[in-house]
Image (cartoon, rainbow, N blue to C red):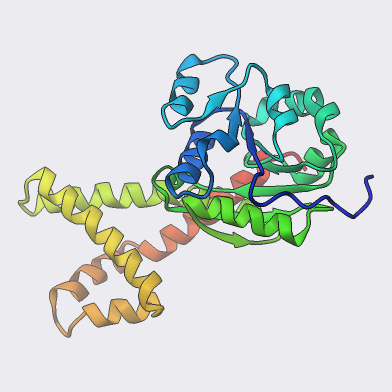
Length: 279
């Protein structure tokens, strides 16, 4: 194993390389450029199979390198964003280029840090779990620190991923549960938005109006929880006046076991995540 002292990454000039130029990598890179956290000439990637991925990166100023090996050589921070089934082969291929000066980051779902560190022969690693709203700059991202990653490394990665949303730190053993909540959670909310819009249509609203109203309503409700700091139960009580319309709607939700269903969804997704990731 390498010694504990890691080279500090140069804050003003460091380069970020993406190994794997998929949608998640694009969202993060685009967020870095749009937020001004990193200029495009300090972001690197290579495209091996699908040329349209290269076009996507080039559209906001990122230059492509001919091969992933060149990306690693020229980067201070290497973000692994390939598909889980190829990550081992990719990491083993790039292993000779992982010097102690480089910080490795994985955004790959279901691949444990101990495996990544073993394949890479490198413990200056941070595992990051963003979710799909990174595409619109509203990700909920959780990060966990590897063996020899420094506090400065953690701050740097929190800043990078802060460009596409909010970042929390947590122990890696919580990642299955985090996946069940924030990883799969956007899909639960998409279902709720679709169902509420259907309800609006059933009550007589035109489809477009119903969908517009409910999307903004969900956005507004989430913003109130974030910005007021009030407990969601309190905010619910504030809307539900005696014998009024809201409490009548809430009563229907409770009849259907609304809260229990959402709780079970998170638990089921977390359980499935545990089953899918090798122990």
